[in-house]
Amino acid sequence: MSAAPHPLLYVGPGIGLGSIVIVLLLFGLILFALGALLWIPLSRGVRDLKQGRAPVRRGFLRGAFRLLAWCMLAILLISLIAWGAVEGTKGHRPLGSLSKVFARMAAWPDEARTVLESDALRGIPDFYGPAPTGFQGVNELEHGIHGIGAFWDRASDAWKVRLLDLRTDSLLWEWSVARDQPGASWELDEVERLFENSPPLHPYLFADGSYAAKLDMTPNLFRMDREGRIKWVNHELVFHHAMHADADGFLWTCASDLPLGPGGPMVGRTLYSPSTGRLAFQEDHIVKVDPADGRIVFKRGVAGILIDNGQQGRVFGGGLVDPIHLNDVVPLMSDGPYWHRNDLLLSVRNRSMILLYRPSTDSLLRVIDGPFFAQHDVNVLSPTRISLFSNRQVFEDQYAATNLLWVPRERGLPIDSITWSQVFEYDLDSGRFHTVEDEALHRMRARTGTQGMHEILPDGSLYLELPGMRGYVVIREGRVVLNKVFGAPMRVGCTNAPGCACSRTAYRRSPVSPRPSEPCRM
Image 1 (cartoon, rainbow, N blue to C red):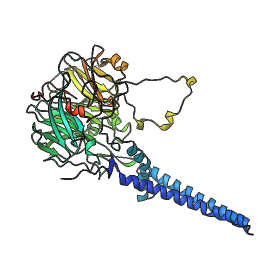
Image 2: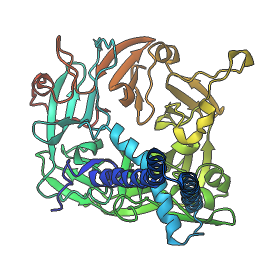
Image 3: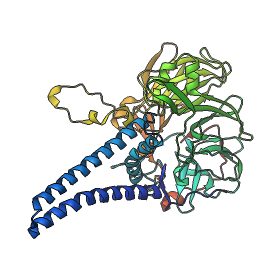
Image 4: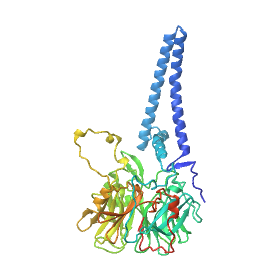
């Protein structure tokens, strides 16, 4: 069994404490060297002046010229490093292997800042944190809603996958996913992630009480039985985001290629052009998995689907670090006017579009885009209607820092406000969109920049999972009937911290078996 990195040696995704120490030492050595170069001639000149030596002027001038020469040499060296770094990030190698080294060095300050600001450094698992300021819990549900999700339990150093009744705030069943789980050799070193920052995301519950999930953004897709025993683990790809079963019982999920070495990029496709040279980029795959043994029985890259179906512009017309960012694969359960049984709806976040894809013929049937962007979670409402969750998030790599400069009000520039996330319904007959409970979402500033799920319940209520606000919400006819923070049962005086005493004990265990036909995803 491969041991997970020790927290003291590893403090965040993609970089270790050793790397931070090396960065600080290198910066310290550079500053020390520059200081020595400047101080030595200057101190000699001052000493000559104090001692009244005859060749004061000549020695002082010699020292000044030497100082100027060293400064120019330092500037030249820094410029050479900067030029090599810029060319290295473009894939060019004017300085040979040094260009690659300089390009890596240029990223050190950002990596150090990312680590110092990371939740992992502060011991906070992903998607967890304090409740929003002024949070007031609400629970006026009239119908039972079941949810299944993962909660970090610091005391047992394990993830707890819990099946909950949100109306009664009771625990129906619980599975424990431990760091040293028997039957599972978790592989975390290759992607450089902490176990406590890799929740068993989006568990899919089977009729026998077992479930399938993945340790998020790691090569660990697994199935656990009702009693908490591991049935199988798949380490072939880096698995992430949602998981669904098709009409034949196979599981569909999202995956990326294994990194090129520990902490390396997860690239799966290569582009060549005169402007870039040879450029590798991330390719996200739709993956079909046999639930009996975890074997991958079908895999197809989404960029490949677009390119092979004449949609190259949708791949190469934007940023290529992560052009696809697949976050949902939804199998269609029956034939309809626009799709066949086991066709797929794919959510491509970084191009803000939904794809209707037919695996049996490798054909792209429809590309859906419009008022939504950076979306997650597509659901089927009827044979002609779908719904989706629009995060409406603008990411840092979409704009230059100069765009953040203060602009005088008298310029009168138009302002587009995107302070809340939205849910859309889309009619395939008319091609029109309309929002769902938008006024209520706007009023409560419901928003999450990443992740996020929704469900339109049988009574017309809207269920939302909002990791950015640490909670989940149900809205019915414009009124919030459930507002709850992750890990915080609705008990008077209960704190909202994940793993606190009340969040471990306030739930009452019920002998009710998991009922997979009813749960909403949490």
